[in-house]
Length: 191
Length: 105
Image (cartoon, rainbow over all chains, first blue to last red; front, top):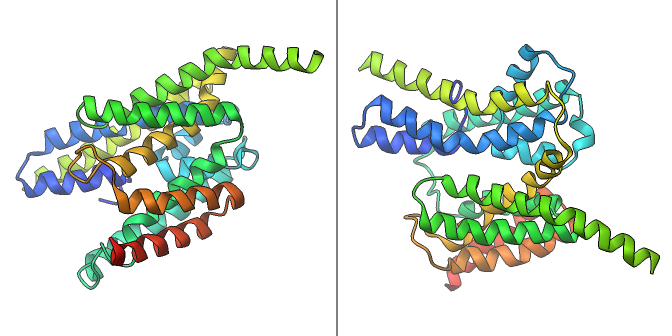
């Protein structure tokens, strides 16, 4: 499954649903909704790959994940119209994911996944990737808006809608605020 | 049962691929208005924030409430990551603090 369905959260939920005896269709539907957040990441990637064939884009987008997106965006000069670089990044992380899945299947029972700070490994990684993306006071503001509103949306709506809703809200506010922030900056420099 | 598994895996593979591919395929082929570009520029920071914050304020069952062990580990990692932007360092420091807090809390 890790080979063809490269999607962590969906895989975990699928396993839970399989154990509950739920049939394939609801699981596929759930997967679809969980993965809708990749619409936004894929849109962002499109800015950097405007000279590639559809076939190449298909290859690149197939392995898009939260983690590889965040790593790729932390230094966009490396990915801009360099599909091979992104493919290398994707292949490395996908290979790690597959070997981790196989390793976990064989040896997973040997250690307790709650031990040794393991629950915090991924959050710590995401926090660092978040800090790398926080490039200006405006970015910081958007981070706070997205974070706080994601808490509200997660509380108010079922499933994973909070990621999509909070991201759209916060970056929408960013679009509205940015020209104003720039104008006041220009004014400040003149004065 | 076998066919059911095939349907499941291929179905999941297809619906995983669609949202990853469609925007990249279509948006890369047309001129994007400046406003949308500005919005896209903020998506990484916004989306990462929506991934991080709920981890600190929701438990595994999805109930709202401060997660002290996560929150207390997160604060020093935020500071360290802000200063150094070092991925491995952040992960190791975060795990050590989280693990140590397990004995105290």
